[in-house]
Length: 344
Ligand code: AMP
Ligand code: TRP
Image (cartoon, rainbow, N blue to C red):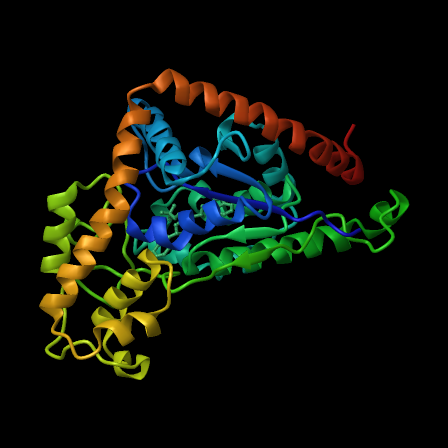
């Protein structure tokens, strides 16, 4: 079956969203709305895998992340916007996929190894199973395209492996059900594009910008005000050389490469264009321009987030409506999956 193109992606409602989330994922999500049917999710089931979350704070974070999506340009009229826990089909399909995925596959997941750290015996089963739930998120809508940052690549390869094994485990039933090409679940494509698919820490160009970094100076949060953004960029680590004129001059200079990439992504251009403009300049000049650009791009988003957050009832209404629409898409797919498996 030729699958109709459909986009699915999600983020966890834990901590602040930051510039990496914005440039690596959100801006792409917003663009794809004009070419695709899109479903964007706040993955609250995933949010409780790494550590216990205070229920009051979790509820608040779900609304904050919804506000950040909308303020960045996700349009809840055109796009389905909802939180994962409100559509039971995600968890149902995840259970079936738990019996499709193999231990050996999950043992290779680098994000689990990083998040579990040394005390692996004490990690939750949910943290280990996280990528299987992620596969269910995508496939319960038969999504074909998944815009994410670079760090999610391995999880999307696993999603394809799960789809392929399910299609093969149930090939007779799938053929009987009339799928001539044997494809019940699509092999989705990652959409990892642009100059900022991996935004690095402002304090260490070899580490990913992350919500869990202890230093707040390492990241620009979407809620940071004008002065904080400018201060963090001014304090960002750099090396002794200035801005090169060509991309080859960024090799082996992770901090310089990161700042140039951020500038390029913020102005929707390429690193080459930024270097044509700033080649030969000192970092102090470049940082000043970068701070102005970041403030110009992020402060309107920030103001809109605050405006939306002042009306939580409206956000709840949007999420409820999104969950109803999402469930309507997922229901026939999970029902047919259960029939294939022999349930009911
Ligand atoms: P998370 O914050 O881990 O829930 O990630 C949400 C989305 O943002 C995913 O698509 C990630 O790949 C993306 N993302 C997170 N951190 C970064 C980063 N430093 N650079 C680029 N994309 C990122
Ligand atoms: N694992 C993703 C992250 O940490 C979040 C996520 C959960 C997701 N389910 C998804 C992303 C489905 C894309 C599609 O960033």
